[in-house]
Image (cartoon, rainbow, N blue to C red; front, side, top):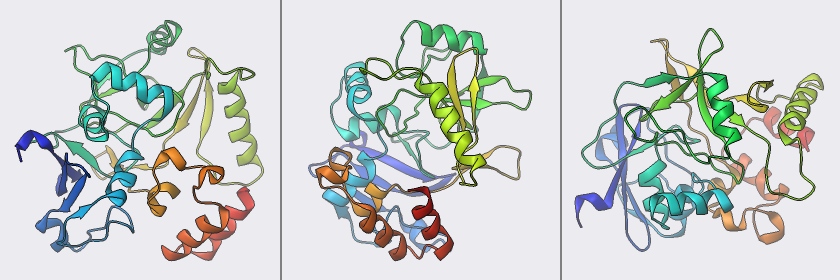
Length: 285
């Protein structure tokens, strides 16, 4: 198999394993990761093992890192690929995960951010552009978030100004503009901001959200990024219920055969989730 048929998976600067472009997708953990005292598995369906993983469990984990629906189709056209591996090769850098994917021969580099203005972001959104902004060198940041809604990933600096993550630089916030093109859906950004802030006032633990007036978008602080000792950001490993259940995003809803509430609770119990967090699940619903 050619080296360009492989993506290397990293946790920080540690090599975790390799994803092979094959039918079905194949993943193997790196020997050094298996020996590391703080090593964790990608998901319960991909346990730490010297054995190579293949099939539905690999597809479910990695496919759920990608956007869905119209946004995925846009990315497929933009990058001339329709496969999960091809899309991850194009945009699988800063994902909703503690891990990052790199093409062969590349290793994690120090994070770099390009300062921009809220006005420039507003102009970008006003023109209806989809996907990440281009860097000054004409290269796109390799960033991906699951879901069907358009999003921009940003670093909000100490003075409140935005910067655009380049390469594998982690983002601190998600900017979510109004959903477009859905009948009966309007002002979704301010509505989401209101609902998130109301939930916080009611004592529910939710991500910090505010309304960004220049872009007219909901600005959400990422809960899966925390400060590190060097003044940067550290990625936290997280899994959604589809990844826990080994379910692809095409059937993520209970009506389509995806995990329901009882199944979600069972998955959390299998992961050793504390009782207080199980109670949070019920209170949130």
